[in-house]
Image (cartoon, rainbow, N blue to C red; front, top):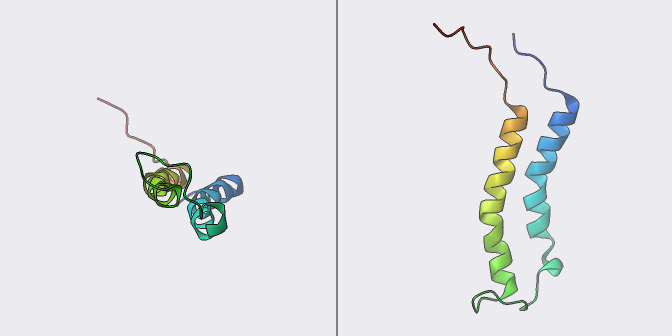
Amino acid sequence: MAKPTRPARRAAAGTCLVLPVVALLCVPWYARSTPRLAGVEFFYWYQFAWVPGSVVCMLVAYLLLRERRDRPPHR
């Protein structure tokens, strides 16, 4: 039988999953052209930076929610 996940871990995992969505839906935060990075306007590289950022957030959420299984003793 699976053990229930602690509510604090579930809340932290939910925050990790909502963070990229909120950060990208609030367009007025990043709707500008400066600062530029390698000639690319902030508007574009901010969005692109959230691609690996979202992966990291999903990984953290997964690690918070995964169930640890007891391993058999090593022979």
